[in-house]
Length: 231
Image 1: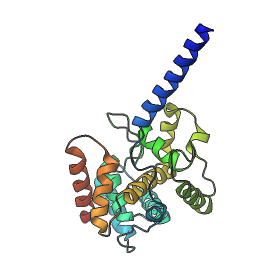
Image 2: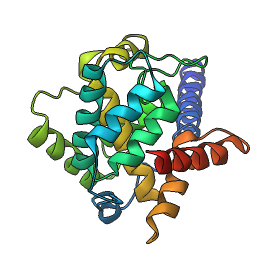
Image 3: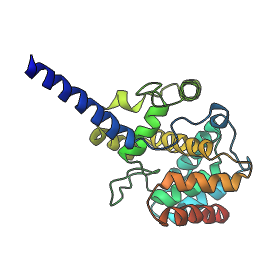
Image 4: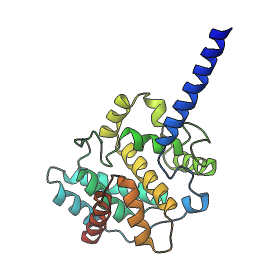
């Protein structure tokens, strides 16, 4: 009986420890307000596809015209789908991968929008992987309805592959996956930092998107806004 009590105490302590450890790694932004999540954060709807394509090929000379057109079309479609600015989203992608679809960073981030396991889990939680304890249920419904209506062939990442080792390979080859996850993560941080001035809103969201310690995240946000002005 005494051994059983000790075992029970150990199990309870272990569960509390694991729960606390997991909680400490949950990034801010999961429970953003629904009204801020469904806002339209487009700065302008006047895009020049030709300018986008030329910009992609100038930054990544190995990209063919066909590849640049494909990336341009999907960036605009996904950005408009989730109400983020396509031109700024393109600037973010330049910063993250320089338009190399199968880019892998020294830290292991992958794809056009350079996802890590932590970033991917953030978005998967917004889409409902771990249930309402990890995201605003209204936001989960909004995101899933948007995907089912506009990308009917969409299958959630965690249903396609179970481990990050397998999932990250998908980010290297699945253009829509990389763009959808990038747009949703950006939208979450826009909602988290919502304010009337859109450029300030984007600056704060980009700081969160980068998430690195120290001053680098502020340089990251400023650089993307500089790229935005270049396009």
